[in-house]
Image: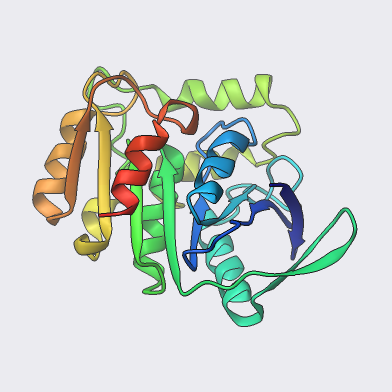
Length: 246
């Protein structure tokens, strides 16, 4: 089983194909920062029968453009629209055309990827399920709780530790912190039947209690797990598969 690389309108993504398909496409939305790529997770999900896509947000890693010039959710929506229309991708190495047949879409997003997933849920009805892990629910109020990560330190970390990897204007990062790039999940109506919110009860970066409160207010399913802040490398494949099958 192989992982293929694709370029669609400047967005680079990796894709794996199942040997026996469940006709379901899983889109993995990266955190911030996130080391691409979660190859073992992609292979495990493909072995379970899923098509799996891992995109690089516009303006990050190999993708063209500028990060945070708008919500990454719009790029994911454009990618999904393209895949639904064509059902084909052209992988870059050969290059060769491959068929991707799916009737259902599931989105997985940890941390920042979960925030993008929640915004995406406000933009489209095409997606059947969202598994969001420890998302920032409201950037403008994030950090008001003492235990939460200071995202201004994240700006410094990205500028110094990921130079040329995340390519953005500082003013747009501050727009993110003001809630102008990704809207507050509390302020917008969501289809709670499609969303499962999973959070580690010892998370030092994003408030566990805030997630629990949001789940109660919105009516979405809430899953408490033991441990800290969740990323693709820290989410057990057994948990993901059990949530996909429910």
